[in-house]
Figure 1: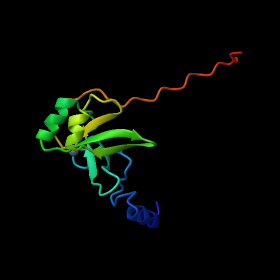
Figure 2 (figure 1 turned 135 degrees about the vertical axis):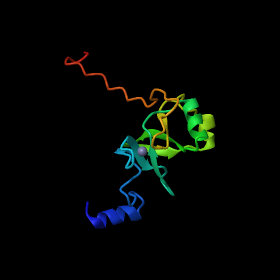
Figure 3 (figure 1 turned 90 degrees about the vertical axis):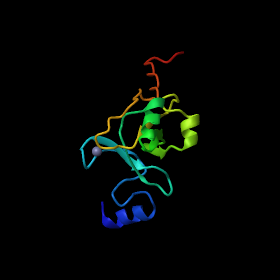
Figure 4 (figure 1 turned 45 degrees about the vertical axis):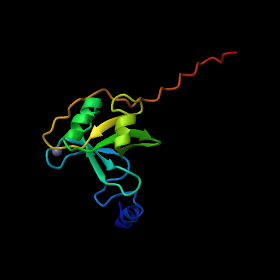
Amino acid sequence: MEQWLINSLIEKGILSADGVGRGARMNRCPSCRKIIIVGLDDDMCAGVARCDPTPLGLWGEVAALLDGLTTYDLAWRARRYELDRRESLNVTWRPAGQCEGFDVLADHRCGRAPQGATASQIKRKPRPAALPDEPPF
Ligand SMILES: [Zn+2]
């Protein structure tokens, strides 16, 4: 990518200086080399979120918060996955692992095994049924 384009994207807030954008993507932790999910955590005034990819359940999020970690929603938005920082109301009204459509991830901390993992709540869209070769009339 050319430098003028990178500068323009940074000025518009689409890309951060380290190449991290609003769309979450897989990467490796520079310290321990484990797979993490990286992305900006909001549309404005965002910080860079680096999360373990393991979805957390209710108690997993509680354990992460008690460990001083930040938690994020990971959801499919239009054409990409996005991370959004969870606030106290999210924790209360949209408990981790109990609402369809998003997963809750915690900050990555090297050497810390995710606790309270649960199955992903992000559902794939059902594929449209195959069209029959013969018309129904
Ligand atoms: Zn690490």
